[in-house]
Image (cartoon, rainbow, N blue to C red; front, top):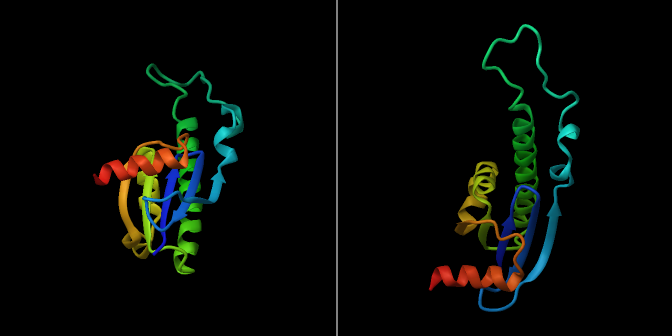
Length: 144
């Protein structure tokens, strides 16, 4: 029985596969969202500025946040598409999700019911910079 572990945040996702958490897993896929690294001015065609008709209390915040969130949601759908294709091909039976808190919610929102049924655990933590062994140990500690 194949177990996959997705370790992700809004910029990077790695998928590991193996028979379980007791033995080293192999890296199946790494997905990087190059757009997440764009500078602020690349996210929008024109920066927010002040206009003469704006009253007190108005500001130019919000556009970048919306663009970053939209980009992260697109990346979540892309990652889920990879997982869904693998599920349909029978590449795994069980899936563990380890993702940054906000991104975990985006992943869950993008999943089909069939893919959700494969998820046996979710960890709301950004472990994308950890090694495979550290991720596996973290998951095994949760079960202990």
